[in-house]
Image (cartoon, rainbow, N blue to C red; front, side, top):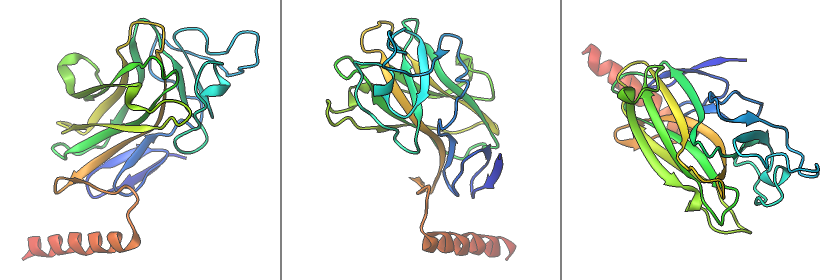
Length: 230
């Protein structure tokens, strides 16, 4: 069920939310990633041909090892599933989503957990944020570029949280994970738990604050309201 959660900084419609940070995608169910060059495939590594052997395919699965015999044994970062990708040699959009209700001028961060699946050859990715619902370069607010060699080698692969800061100029932004790798070998990666989090006083607010933090925040906001009325 879609819920609307009001934080102190913005209002976002989403299926999973916390008070200060909002999870906009957890990949627990099959999704449309908003791209024309990836094909959804079901994972069955015991099939005659590994299910994600073809370039430009993806699955929503619990472990990359279920999808390709050469990929690392990597469970979901959170929950039970994540987006497992054999990247297209054409590069392009991996995932895109429009987020409504952000407040203009409220500094924010778009984050995603990323892992490499074939760690001998990393993939190159970008996180991008655009104003409004257009992904034209003229509307781009912010970009960060990185590669999946951020992870240590097997047998201890880790998820890394990558983030890009932005300041919205309207109440709608579009966030995007973009593949910049044009070669086939190693262009394999996982994505989990996308979120949008505002800054308050220059610091990222803990997305799951303790009850005492909530109480302090309530007192602080109430005090601000009282001072404004004086």
